[in-house]
Length: 197
Image 1 (cartoon, helix red, strand yellow):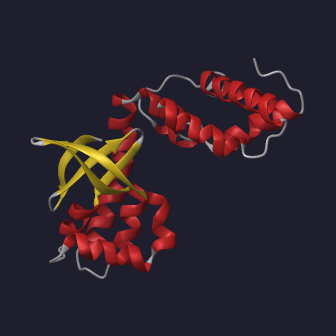
Image 2: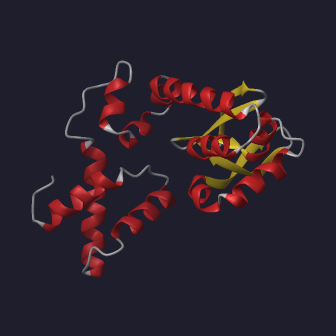
């Protein structure tokens, strides 16, 4: 987990984990002005578990005294917490996060981490400053996915579970997977015998 910027709002630091913006549970609570910040966000999570469960994880952050594990939410999860919170600062923080989201997509992530680009949809990609022309619809990334799909089918005789296996594979090797819609298009082409390479 890499620190992108300190104190974007009331002491809230912005981190990056791969292609995602993330924020720590404690700092979200502090930014919203809770007296017991970590506990307050835990309570919100408990009340809205189904809506928040897919937008959080335990990540490792580097500190002056060494690495430690912290509970974090990605940008979507943090914005949802603001919606569920009754704190007076929640609306203001939500506005800050919305503004920063567009700013970061337009500048920092695109420039710092070129590997993020294949994960963007075409509309967002087209809005990035000075981006190279899309050639072959993210051809290299799609070729990797196609090879994985073909290998999986050869081993299993079926496409069942292939997307889940592909995402787990990407996590294991540190790759950023292409989106599910692109992945499914490749799978359909392979099923229909269309040449991808």
